[in-house]
Length: 252
Ligand SMILES: N[C@@H](CCC(=O)N[C@@H](CS)C(=O)NCC(=O)O)C(=O)O
Image (tube, rainbow, N blue to C red; front, side, top):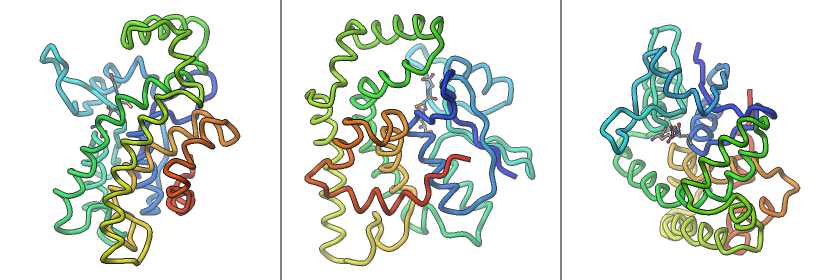
């Protein structure tokens, strides 16, 4: 049995806020793997990971290990895996009879596709963080507010204002995300089968894109102006793609 560790949002959990954790949810659902989800508060990720023996995924600027979610626990093997890409590879190995997330010979390309996400994350988080903080209890909210004000060098009021749907930040993310569309067009020019990155089969690369869209949808809500805007980015060219991924979005 697999346990999936996602990040909790104190007041309205589960309201999965993390694009990285969304990748793992999409991958698990796509493979139809039986799993349960446990939610860990953002402030407790490092302590939780150290306690369980979940490996760090990066190094902090001061050289110390950085612990992140998503992570999974495989109770059959007593193993913890962290990092969305490594989790996808592990799931392929563990469930060889299910469709692959990283099909043979595509690992380097999938990793390169993922790298496109890094600058997007830096721009998306300052927008979506508004909704993340709204779900915190008053004490955590005050603490987190100070933290993000310091991190982004702006007042909370300015951060909230910048996340209004008519603000430039959304256009900026739209432009970066459209790079993936350019590559999808190149794929489409030679292979018109299917909507996914590698054609007719969903793969890890699609979960990377899905993380952007479904974390934003979860946070702002289906009826929000922000979600309507994001879903219709690039003149509506993402709509079919997003709708095709809905079937892998169940929060269990
Ligand atoms: N490369 C990792 C990145 C995961 C990541 O950065 N997760 C964030 C949540 S969105 C995290 O856990 N951050 C913890 C922290 O910043 O202390 C993956 O793909 O899983």
